[in-house]
Amino acid sequence: MTSCSEEKRALRREIRQRKQLVSEVEKARLSHLLCQQVEALPVWQEARTVLLYHALGDEVSTQDLLQRWAGQKTLLLPVVDGDDLLLKPYRPQAAMTPNRWDILEPTTDTEVFSDYQAIDLALIPGMAFDADGHRLGRGKGYYDRLLPKLSCPTIGICFPFQKVEKIPVEPWDIPVQRVL
Ligand code: ADP
Ligand code: MG
Image 1 (cartoon, rainbow, N blue to C red):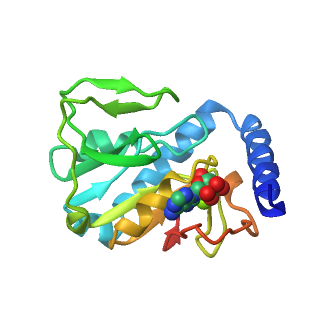
Image 2: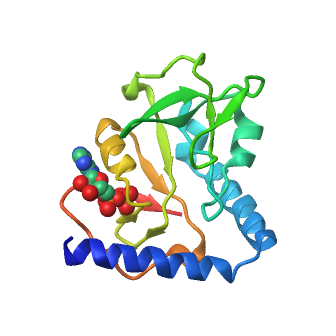
Image 3: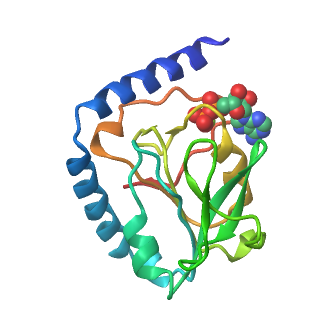
């Protein structure tokens, strides 16, 4: 175990503690605000195909975006497949199934979206981000493997308590281009 991964683990603990101090109501309020900020971005307005995600409790909820834009853009959601994330289109009418972290995913009968070049924007969740776009995930490296496949703008989204001075970075860590 490297000291860098120790630092990452300590930072994940720290973020979990900070999260305890913020109420669900406040997190919901901030999620609504952040979704409005996303909608104000030209890159969002121009995008036809966007990668979103279903949030865990300590991540910014993109539910507003899924609800408001499903008819107008192709919205993709990640589906865990072994060590990788597959992408599938979000269909408001289709059933969703919880994965092992209780995150809702499009079901197996929804087709996999593999035209990565067609994705115009990707919103990336994280446990923490720094000003350079370095990202701390949950420790599985899913987005470090997904991000190299994307050629579109990537935006990390987080609550204020998830912005940190400096994220410990390992060689495989892929940063996002900006953080909201
Ligand atoms: P996270 O990004 O979720 O915070 P880490 O960056 O600590 O997690 O990575 C977790 C694990 O994922 C590491 O042990 C690393 O070996 C593995 N990993 C990350 N990126 C890749 C990759 N591109 N290919 C193979 N394994 C990877
Ligand atoms: Mg990483």
